[in-house]
Each structure stands twice: as C-alpha cells, then as structure tokens.
Amino acid sequence: MSPTEDLNDDLRPEYDLAKLRVKAVGPGRQTDKSLVRLDADVARFFPTAEAVNEALRFLIRAAQQGNPVLREDVETPYTTDPEDDEPSP
Image (tube, rainbow, N blue to C red; front, side, top):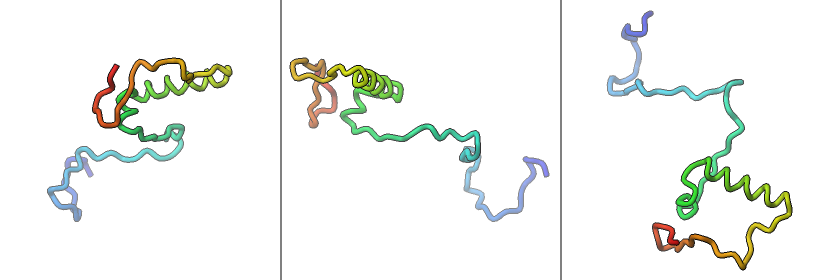
C-alpha cells in the first residue's frame, strides 16, 4: 500500500495528522533531562536553559570551593518587585 493511497479507517476527515509526531521510546530516548518550571520573576533573568545552567554551574563551583556566593554587603545589580513586570536596575 502506498502512502498516498486512501486508507479505509474510522478517522474523521477533519483530523489533520500532517503534524503528528511520535514520542521517542527505546535506547535512543534522552532521559538525562529534567523539566523545571521557573516562576515568572526568575524567568525574566534566565530566558533560556543555557542561562539557567550557567548560573547553577557557577553556584555549584562556588559552593565546592567554599566561597561565599551571597553576602549581605554586596548589592545586586537588579531588584525585582513582585508587582512589576520588568526588573529594574
């Protein structure tokens, strides 16, 4: 049976299967990724997965070296107000 040949099935004609994707299973499936949801105020500072990973790797390195990463005497360059949509300098 050719792919262009009509099939005798029970699907309604309005179902568009052109964009159908099959979920990957088996040995080729990537399982080393986790999904983490960021709150909106945090996501504004970390718009990509790469930005989040870079910041977390920095914190991991600093913690392993015993360096204090967060100190009360250091001002942060940006502050967020939960009422604001944009971070302010």
